[in-house]
View 1: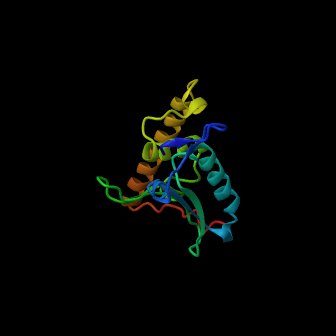
View 2: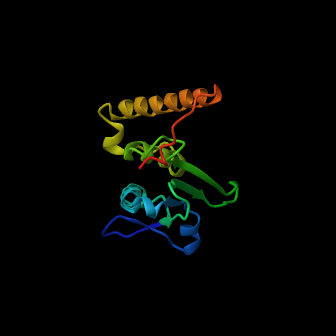
View 3: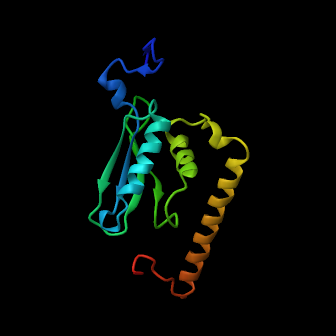
Length: 159
């Protein structure tokens, strides 16, 4: 992104290969669970925050019930191998993402070291990090319970 439009000061890609070199984001959701609105909200927030650092955000209705997964696809570059990172998985992460946590996870892949403005200020980072750590602890406890033979109730089957 070598040039810039003087009026709006937005970086402009000089070629389609520059755009193709940027990461893209895929949001897979269950339409039967009516999660399209959640998916579009996440897409809008990610596009607004990372518009200069990503090539696209795409929505993918899943044929598998209960799916809500957000992936970042990093294309192959000269010294970097192509990869796909799952930044949010509803079942693994115990629910839907707080947008602050989601933006941090995406930022750590597409633009490490870049600040997120008000999200990173005024103690907001510490509160959401604590919440994320609590979620991870709950996951570990559930895994331990499952290993010990205690049945874990399936949340997908609840009416």
